[in-house]
Length: 263
Image 1 (cartoon, rainbow, N blue to C red):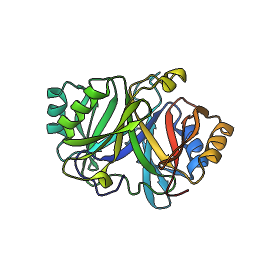
Image 2 (image 1 turned 90 degrees about the vertical axis):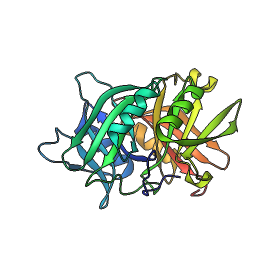
Image 3 (image 1 turned 135 degrees about the vertical axis):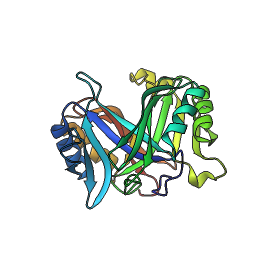
Image 4 (image 1 turned 180 degrees about the vertical axis):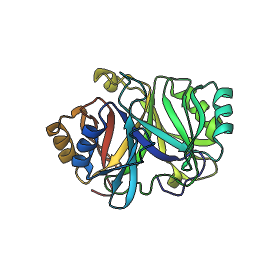
């Protein structure tokens, strides 16, 4: 499960790139009760999503005109420069090299060998998200890919992950966590694109974000009422929970889940 005890290779941040920051902020505010707080006049429109006093995600304008609206997963690193070298050695691509974000920290962005985009965060004054796993916060990250074996090899090389494969339908689901830890420390999943996903048009190799909610079906209905779209209907997975895949009004996909333990 996700925690805020960040160690190298664990998800520590997520942000949304969108062409409509104000409208997207309103959508997620209605959906999750988030408030928008600007990062300041020099941040280019970037800001934080807060729940109470805690930062739970972030949002900013797409870097280029016509750019895709998407959520990005950031993994903790103690050294963004060293991670960049590890990505290149493992066959990944550097989308943008390490740079300082004022005094908050240092970041870099990559594409893995199977085509999925992700980033890393080296903390400065900002260690990472203040809350995860709680209601209306990030609770899981998941890679869907056309080549799960290659992806596992890559991330284990870059982040020293241990991956345990579990049977799921006709395939397997990889549970990733820091090497030397048990199942309770898993933080991400890796899965191949299934036939069901192909039927729904979910064929992209990408990192997905999951947000914990009290009532998955109610959130799906609310998202649709606010201009969002249901990409994959709510489905119950035994011992895991009920989950759905949505897209916001500007096309960014995200997942919501009511965990079995919460239900």
